[in-house]
Amino acid sequence: MATHKSAIKRARQNEKRRLRNKSVKTRVKNTVKNVRLAINEKSKEEALKELNNAKSIIDKAAKKGVIHKKTAARKISRLSKQVNTVSA
Image 1 (cartoon, helix red, strand yellow):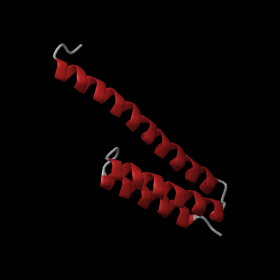
Image 2 (cartoon, helix red, strand yellow):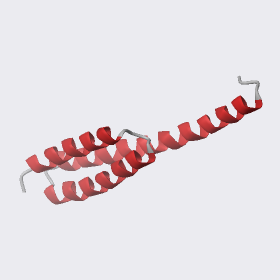
Image 3 (tube, rainbow, N blue to C red):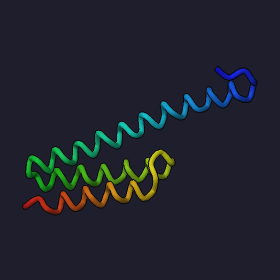
């Protein structure tokens, strides 16, 4: 454990950020899973609705710096590609 005052504060800040980032990453994973489930059910409308929701959440995560901007773009691109393969 840290002994300097500044190091103790830094450890406290890191723990708070770790927990915040963890919740955002979990939210991203759950929305991606919801899109994939909608795709597997062959529901085009539901998949599109879930995709728009996922895009928003992934973009917010990238904006906050939880995931990299290009990672977010890649996730959205791959999900969009999968949704487009679903027949109407």
